[in-house]
Amino acid sequence: MPFIQELISGTLDSEKFKFYIAQDSLYLEHFARALAIIAARSNETEQVLDFIRFAEGAIVVENALHNNYFKEFDITKNIPQSPSCHHYTSYLLKEAALAQVEVAMASVLPCFWIYKKVGDYIYQHQNKKNNPYQTWIDTYAGKEFDLLVNKAIRICDEAANSCTAVQQGKMTAAFLKSCQLEWLFWDSAWRLEQWPFPANILIDTGVHYR
Ligand SMILES: Cc1ncc(CN)c(N)n1
Image (cartoon, rainbow, N blue to C red; front, side, top):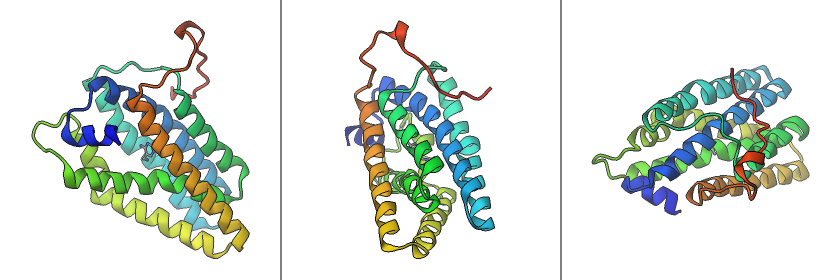
């Protein structure tokens, strides 16, 4: 995707990166809540603990990185979610709350796995010289993130083993839906996606940390 290619070369328009970081920060808030709901609904103590740790990681580690970028790039806080961000987070929260918990687990798996794959790809092809997005690149290619992602994949595989073929089909569908929404999220940053309404009537239903 052009967003990824230009992140690699370091030529990405800073407005697009700022848009991405601001939206991703909103995404992470909701993603962490979805993980916490899955933790509460999990059937095994180990899974409860793992999903609580995943939720903590999304807030503490990933959002801390974003906060640094907020300062460095002077990004505006408290903006409303873009249409794609709103759609993706609403989908994850719906799955976390209403789907069979194994299906909910599959719906959040691309959030881990795609970032690992994309992170590794970027790391291997990166231009290290004066890339303004280096810290971002290092976060998702690191060993710690690798361990986290492998754990999320293992949990899903184990969960799938206890499911019927029909339930496994629903897990696959939820996984593929989130893969498409990950694609849409990058693409929306590239397009600087906006609602087709004037700014003064945009409604923000986000849950910002206080
Ligand atoms: C949209 C999105 N998806 C996944 C990740 C990695 N947790 C993220 N930061 N942003």
